[in-house]
Image (cartoon, rainbow, N blue to C red; front, side, top):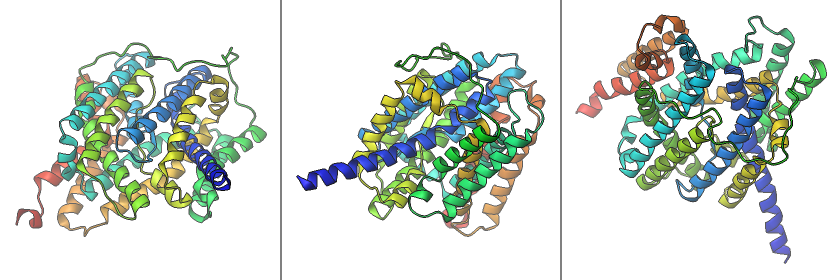
Length: 435
C-alpha cells in the first residue's frame, strides 16, 4: 500500500512537471502570431485555446501510435516564419489578414497530405540521407536568424501599427530575456528546467507593476466550450501553396529525426531509431497538420527540446507525459483559464522565446561544426547563408510583381537558404563520397 502511494505521488508530481513544460513551450507563439495578424484579445484567447487542444491531443497521438516516445508536439518555428512572410505578401497582393489565414489553413492541410504520403509509402525513411548534420545545422541557424527579427520587434513593442520603440516595454522585455538566459545557463535543478516559465511569470508581474494590466476587451466568456473548427473560415485553395507545402513537408522530416534521436539518447543512453518509427512519426505529423489546419492554429512539430527536459528532471517514464498531454487537452475546454494565460504581454512572451533560440542557434552551429569544415562545406554554407539571409533583408515589395506561386517561395529566406544547402550538398559530392 505504501509503495502504491509513493508511485502515485511520483506519477502526480512528474505529470505536473510535464504539464508546466507543455504550457511554457506552447504559450508564446500564439501571442506572437496574434500580434502579427492584429488579432484582438478574444481572437488571441481563441487561438490559445485551440493551440492547447491541438498540442495536447497530437502529443498524445504521437506518443501512443506515432513514434511512441515522450516528445512534445509544439508550435513550429518554421511555420511562424511562413505565417509572418505570408502576412506581408498577402497584404501586398491586396488580401486581408482573414483571407491569408484561410490560405494558411490550406497550406497546413496540404503539408499534412505530403507528410502522410511520405510515411505511408515509406519515403520518410528513404530521404534521411538528405539531412546531414550540415543541412540540419544550416536550417536551425537560418531559422533563428529569420525569427529573431520577429521576436525582437515584439520585445520593442513594434507591432500592431506601432512604429516607435516603447522604452518601458523594451526594458522589461530585455530583463526577461536575460533572466531566462541566465537561469537556463547558471540555474540548477528545477530552476533550470523551468527557466522559461519563471522568466514569463517574473516578466508578467513586473509588467503589471510598472506598466499596468493589459487592456482586454469586455466579453462574455463561457465557462466551458469546445475548440472551434475552422475558426479563421473555410480553407482557401491557392496554387502557390502547393510547392511551399511540399518543401515544408520535406524539411519537417528533419524535426522528426532530430527529436527521435535526441529523446532516445536521453532515455536509452544512445541514439536509436528504426525506419518504421520515422515513417510512423511522419504519418502522424501529417495528422498533426490536418488538426492544426482544421482547428486554425500554428502547425505543430516534435520538439527536440523535450530531451533537455528529460535530462534535467530525470523523468524517463512515458506515462506521466501521456497524462500531462490529456490534462492540457482538458484545460483547453475551459476558456476563462485559457484567457487568463493568454493575457501574457507580447514583449514578455517574445523575450522568453528569443532566449530559448540562443540554445537553438548553438545547436545549429554545433551540428555544422560536428565534422571538418573543408572548402566544399564552407562554400555551400556561405553561398546559402549569403543568399538566404540577404533575402531576409529585402523589402517584400521587390517581389510584388512575381506570380503568387513564386512570391511566397523566393521571398522566404529560410526556405531558399535551406533548399540551397540541400541541393548543393547533393549535387556537389565530397571526395569521400565519390571515391
